[in-house]
Structures are given as structure tokens and as C-alpha cells.
Image 1: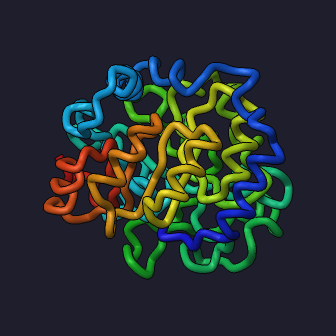
Image 2: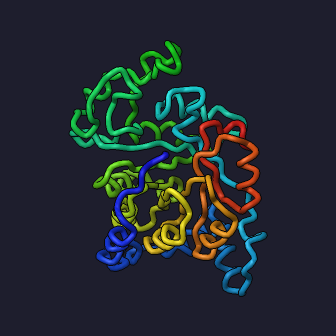
Amino acid sequence: MPESVTGSYASRMAIITERGGRARRAGDSRRERALRPGWARLAAVLAIAAAGCTSPGGIWSGAPERIAHRGNSSVAPENTLASVRSALALEPPPQYVEIDVHRSSDGTLVVIHDATLDRTTNARGRVAQLAWGTIRQADAGYSAEFGDAFRGERVPALHEVLDAVAATTTSVMIEVKAHGIGDRVARLVADRGELARHVIASFHADVIVAASLAAPKARTLYLAGHASPEEIELAARIEADIVGVGHEGLTAAAVHAAHQKGLAVWAWTVNEPERAAELYAMGVDGVISDNVASLQ
């Protein structure tokens, strides 16, 4: 993030129509997923909506989630184990760390934001065209920003990040950057027995649908550039659990509209405590930040 949202609304809705709403048929409903630990607020909004309450106040009363964007990326190289461990060491630690995932040419799920190695490592090349062994040799210490402090830091695989948080209270928001791998990510999380813990996110509606078809109990987050009625409707149609939106221009009315459809709302990327406080007052359920330590 930020990320351009590709494809028209009509074309993306066609994806959902083609699937015929099959994404959740084999599993539980969004309401049932809401009853899991950490998701009581979703159950609350549905109960209040059923009772005819339309006021946004008090519906989402739990403390907002704090999500460390690309790990604790203000103090360590983004999307590295060093950045993840730095986030875990915060007191209190964030509820989530956010990471990005591509796939190597030989099928490894690689934690990196860009489609190439160029910006964040000392190597070059497209991730999808390189073997994992080649990617692993790159230095991800990101000397342009951090000097030699993290020299030798390597690009991690997704399973390594999941292993790093396994014994902690922090979960992972896994942003799937590439088309065609949502199902792979969902199956990996399912095989680890961690579907109820982590969140699979993407700007691509087809990725969310693919993840849901592969693992109907997966928790999903549809990312949008802004909280327009069309994007909120799309998130609801693909039965995402959360809609993630850019914080600029976000309004309490848009948050309320998402809540009315049973969607939690996470805002990105929020680095000013004053803006975070404004978003909390609107009823936002989570804030994604490069400097999560400053957001309490």
C-alpha cells in the first residue's frame, strides 16, 4: 500500500457473478466467523442491526486493532524477519503484523512488497521469474535507509513469518500481491491449522474469492483505495470479513455503511496519532501503520 486498484467495478463484479456465490457455500457464514475470538464486534453489529438500531455509535465498541505495516518498518527493513521481530518486541505488541506475498518461479511464497527485488534488496529481477534459492541470496538489509545495521538480512518465505509469530499473541495480515496465488496462501494457512488466527488480504477480488474457495473458513480482507459505496458493496458480495481502505477522505458515514453490511473497517496507512484518534472516533476497527508504537 498504496496500490492502484485495477479493473473496473463491473469487471470485478463479474468475477463474483461467475463464481455464483460459491466462495462460502462449503463453509460457515460471515456471521458464524464473527463469533470467533476477536470477532465479537461483528456479531454485535448484526444483532443491533436486526433490532433496528441505525446509529453508528456503540456498535463497534472494542479497542481498535493495531497493525504493523510490513512489520515495524519505521525501524527495520520492511517485510523482513527483523522487522517482524521488532514489532513483536513492542510493548504492547500490535495485534497484527502486515506483510506482502509474491510467488517465486519454483513456487515458494515469498514475503516482499514489490514485484521485483530492485528496491528493497541488493539484487535485481522479477520475483516470479527467479528461483527461491536465487532470491534467498539477496541482501534485504535495505542499506539505502538503514545503512549497515541490517546487513545480511534475507528475504523470508511466508512460512518463516508464520513460524516467527507462532508462540506470540500477534497474528498476521497476509497481503497477497499477485493474482493466482490466493488459493496457495489459504491452503498453507489451513494446513497449519491457523485459519481462525490470520487474515488473508488483497486488492484483487479474484484473490479473495480464490482463497475463500480453497479454505471456506479463511478470514479475508478486501483492500480498496477508498470507501466508496461500490467498493463496500463489492467487499460484501465476495463475503470478505473486513474492508481495508485508505484513511484519507474516510468518513464516519462510510464506516457505518460498512458496519451495516457486517464488515469490519481497517484504515491504511496511518502514521499520525492525531489522525488515528479521529479514525477511532469514527468507529474504525483497525489502523495499519508504519509506526504502530505511536498509536495507542
